[in-house]
Image (cartoon, rainbow, N blue to C red; front, side, top):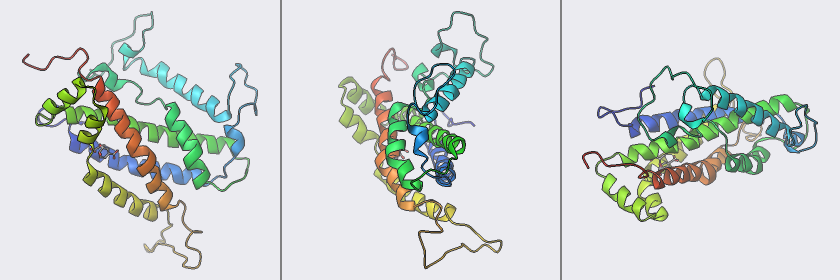
Length: 268
Ligand SMILES: C=C(O[C@@H]1C=C(C(=O)O)C=C[C@H]1O)C(=O)O
């Protein structure tokens, strides 16, 4: 997808559209996970013994294997990040001329995201207990984590777009040079966008979380409103409010703090 605007810099509007689309991905991934019980055993180390000596939980093993494949494959498209000794084929698609850090970690699930997902989200969306669907549960966890990680790491692109806004750039440069984390955070925060997002998310979670009949009615049981919701809208809103948005902004600030390293403003 082309995320550039008419000046060939990243378009903030297009990036925001991507984040809106990712809301759907995340809600549906959570709905998929919520079909299965908590299955705590997949999060405990020592339940299985792995052939290759891996120590950790079943989910940890699963993620480790998946990320290894991603890293192996990705070196063809982002060779700068993988200092392998053998020469690598040139990427088929030319990489956009962004700072190399923009490409890093865009798929890797990081520790913070995993911890908060396991402590805060899974116990709220799954019934406690064990239905022995370990493979299915772990697969859904991987999908949730990848979607969350992607969304949160999009903060780098968002931050780049904000930095390239000519009206804002001088202020960003001043704050970055002063290493003023709070000032950068304040400048990149857009409360109107955040409020609109949370409202939209609640409606989406409510709508996507209900079945719809062939004539288009939403199946609601007034006697048991909780029972026929596949996912609780409050949990999804809370997830974004306390976890997804703050981490995205953290990524934005971290990205901007290193934005001037080795950079010269055009024309200087
Ligand atoms: C992502 C952006 O930056 C910030 C983070 C937001 C988010 O994570 O949803 C929303 C608005 C901004 O406060 C944006 O401006 O769109």
